Length: 273
Ligand SMILES: [Zn+2]
Ligand SMILES: [Zn+2]
Image (cartoon, rainbow, N blue to C red; front, side, top):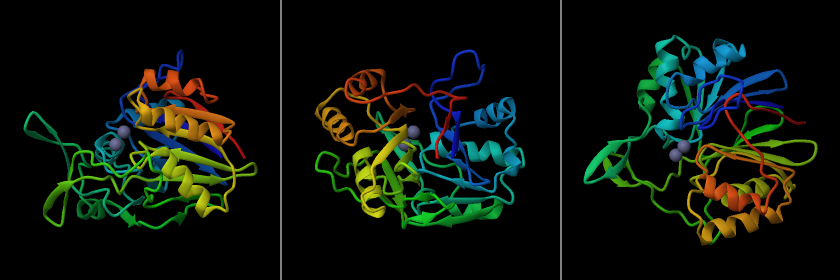
């Protein structure tokens, strides 16, 4: 398994790749190629060019959730003729309109494209259930919220069946790689809670150990939840821990006291078996 960070908030020094507050990973496993999220703009396209990655050759795109920092790159891909012929895999709620409320104003923060619009451009496969993507790689689908300190909490609004309602981010999902030494978890923003994601992955895959986590964790404040998360993850005895995207420096400093935290940025490559 080879994971290349195409887009992250940070960028590796001396590689001269672009960063943006968004996320996109390029995955190669068993001769198969996938994109996991597409960032906010054409940054993934520019970085792929610099890295010699041909986005036209990648048949599938998995979307972690509908927020624009993970989906808006679809517009850039379409504008450059790079979406036709591809299949997009996501939770059914990923392409519903989403809004943030700021000073009484509603700000659109969802995907530029609805599911119907996407189906005019490429193939769309939606699932709330887990899906096998390659021999070892799985899409988790909807994540049950079962960890007491990670309850379902609304983040903005979602328009579902014409009704604007609190968005519990049921579309937020992650990938799991079942490797030789255990499970590796690849996340977008972990709005579902990284411990909920880890617990669900272990339920689905016979309580195998989790050895590696890479991705956004939506941990921004140094609060009680962060301490509980750090303790939960520390008990997993991870070999590698690569929090990125939506993890503040303050949260990273706390997490680094408990976990083998490593840096991430555009251009970073991780390989494992
Ligand atoms: Zn998000
Ligand atoms: Zn995000």
